[in-house]
Image 1 (cartoon, rainbow, N blue to C red):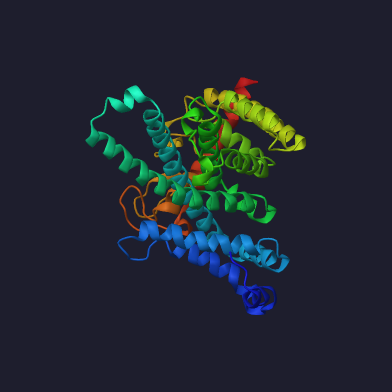
Image 2: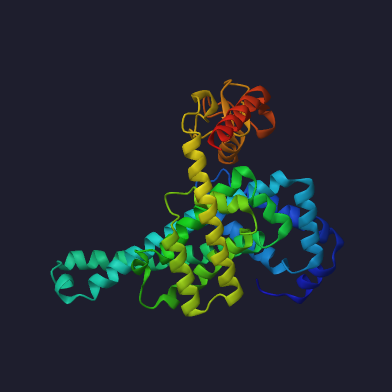
Length: 362
């Protein structure tokens, strides 16, 4: 953000801004999701880029940070919705960036191979050049937006008052899956496909992105809930990927030795938690269907009844759905989290079942 002395003085001293600006930033971040414009999907990225810029500019100001903590205390739902939008954006932008990098890598390899390039007709070569120019322009834009979203993610997870929102039951698995997926892309077996020539021209700094991803892990690593959420992600998580990230951080030295040790400790916690999760999955494999969430087919811990359809779901599962789609998934009628009805009787029967199985396994 370009500094203007008058504006800077206002941000630093104006009591109205100090009291309400953070709330306004988070509210607007959510509201720009739907503007009614035909281009609203792409417009929101631009709006949120500037909102993120303001947020990061004010991040170290104790008055604004205190205002943000107060917002979490009085309106955690707004902060949760903002974080949900942030993750949506980061996922889409990073996916778009990585897909574009892979395509650019392929085109550069083709153009650098005389035999392959000369085998194309002039018309095909012209099409490839046009496509090359298009994705170069696209890459610069998506990288700028993606980097901004990830920087905000690292900042928010680094604040203890805000971190607890990321660790809510309906959010923690989503964050873990996202981080696991991008860690795999950056250090996994296909990471060579992300290498492009003149990467600085596009703003592509894979080391910086990997640093941010690993720091987000470390910010959340203090919670055993987070380690458990990583362990149950069988699509992207693997010990090998974590060891590869640790090796790269050690060789290139983009994390400090204490941070690398913290990452090792996180891996150990994931491995321990993963074994416990596997044992429980085997122990409860014969759970009655009525104990299973109808969306995820997992054993429910906090069953709730959906008032319109009468269906019973696990609270974290249905609340995760409601963050992106405020409707009952079984009949599409409007539904809010506060309308969910705790099913205490079923929860007690599930607990009795789990305790009985655990007692029998001793």
